[in-house]
Image 1 (cartoon, one colour):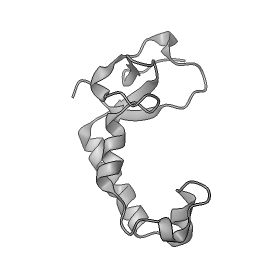
Image 2: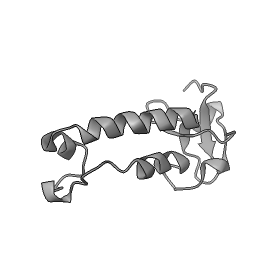
Image 3: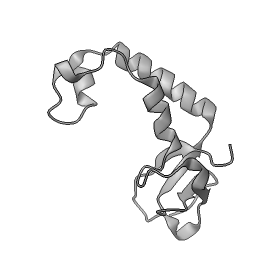
Image 4: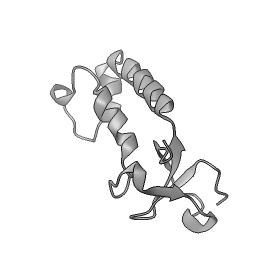
Amino acid sequence: MTISNDMTTCKNCGWVHFAVSRDYIKKQTKEFAAFWNNSSIKTKLLYMPLGTKESDLPERYNEQKHSERYLRCFKCGDSYKNFRKSKEKDSPVGCTIQPILDYKE
């Protein structure tokens, strides 16, 4: 896989993410919260684990929880601060890559 300049690798577990800025996180969080808060129950259930009941849905989208997901490794939960620039062999072809706050911020 060709590694772009925004790819970062967790020093703890080796999982590759793409680095994003705090502004990106803020924008994505606000946009998804607006989408969620204005969506039908049926649509909200599509974003929840299978078997979630309507009564289990939060009234408002938790923006803080959403933003905090960008601060931890998707696989092991380590801090974005424990990342490095990715190398060519870090990520296999066809893998899914999640966003994380850029370790340089």
